Image (cartoon, rainbow, N blue to C red):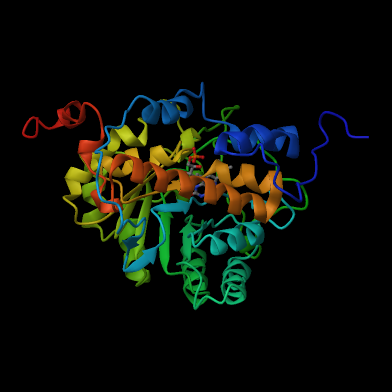
Length: 387
Ligand code: FNR
């Protein structure tokens, strides 16, 4: 007997009615305990940023260029000297074992099969070394020379030595890019992990409280929370601590984009953390054009928060993003059907993107430019010189 709050086990075959990321999202709720489902889905506050993250894509419209010769078409892009099959990556998401017993191991196998980079979170529920090992094993099984580039997402730890240790472990395990997330050191969360899920990379490290309290006493200022909240100095330190490319995740302003480049960042992920940290933040797509202009193409800008359709990828690239990342959809797919679900979800998104490129006359990701968006003059309204 399964009651309403008993999650269904993951499917072993993909039913024909799962045809979009929205289908996976709708189905996923049945496969997760209610409090886990709410934790995954939730946005901060009144969830206006969460809603805006979708609306930012829906209110923009594409203008196709017909009769283009598509015979040399490709979805491939290069980031930090490495080839990616498409400008779509899996965003760092904590604790995949909340969604499936195999957790990140299922996700990385699916990502490897679909030639897609997964950004492994500091808060992964499987050790980062095992995830990298699973990527290499999956690539070998598929008779590929190597898995797609491995990226590791870094949260600063209370003790800098521990942060340095995480960086060294990621380097030693073969991760090729570091994503430094800067927008979530101060946030609220009431979610308690189930006993069988933990932060596998941090087992020997002192516990870090990432949550501000709105109950009595000190809220944020004067609390240990601020000991780990990174500053620009942290980025300068990280730059000196690793030779890997550093991508700063969670910036939303032109000034911060410029500062990040000045502090040695090799790339930026324009993101409001999927609307999870502070309600009312600008949706990334609205912030993007001014940020692209601020860095003057010196470093690539990627974008996440709300990407759910192939046409969303097109819209983000048209406004200057080099690639996008998807967060929650990987958890939905993992809960519904494990590795097969994530592989299928990625295939859907990739196929939608390629189809939309072909239907709008874009022969390559570089060909996706502002002209593809209706009313693109209004988009550059921030900059009178352009309009
Ligand atoms: C996240 N995100 C996140 N980001 C990060 O840098 N490190 C992390 O550990 C996590 N963990 C995490 C858990 C959960 C449950 C969610 C939903 C998100 C943020 C993530 O990388 C990404 O920015 C957003 O998920 C993008 O928005 P969408 O695609 O979920 O709308």
